[in-house]
Image (cartoon, rainbow, N blue to C red; front, top):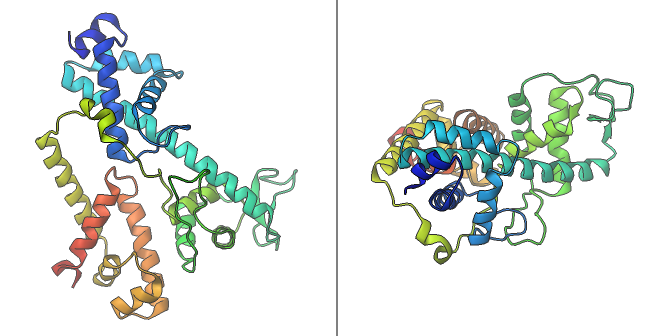
Length: 318
């Protein structure tokens, strides 16, 4: 009996459906570069099984089961639906975990810096929002998140501390001075106090905070790996190319030139482009803002950006 037939008959996961769920978790975790669950350093068999059961253990588990049983009409459709359920679950969990760590880090940094304070009780945002102590951020901000991200990107002299997957605790994304400088720039752009969660969103966008690299030992779970679908591969490649073309279409020739070398420090980027340092920094900030707007939510964001940078060095980038 197939996984789909099993689910339709019993309304629950039997042996075949459970194995199919494990396969989906393994495939989605690897493809999406999601971090393994707490307590695991890699996506081994235990991590896969724990995550698979957690997907349907929360309050939305029964609803997910019903939707699978109703919407799936064969094994292929069940696999696609399962992969989407698992992908959404891992995205939500990764987003919550990373943002929570970043918020704690910002509370530590801002709490030790006299430029920042928590808004006093009795005022709008009291006890929750962060303000500048010089009095330049009265009231509560209610503008666009993209404006805050733009302000964060304008801070170009930063010291980045790379995330390490093997660290005993999650590494900071930047030193305290850099984080405080970026937060000050964001607050000044807002002209009002901000919840620490909004500051965290702007900082996360500025430093491209995301899931840590995944380490998957092939011999642990390869027997479950679904066969490669050449049609799906071709479709993915087409989607990546279309997204890269959309990004390039939003850029001027000068912005494409900067995009091609965007991973370099501003000084080296200026040397490659022939632009002045201040102009280079401004153009780079604009390019990063456009990248967020065009491909910020793309599933294959890294592949899209790599291809766009490659294409920018060709005829379209001249």
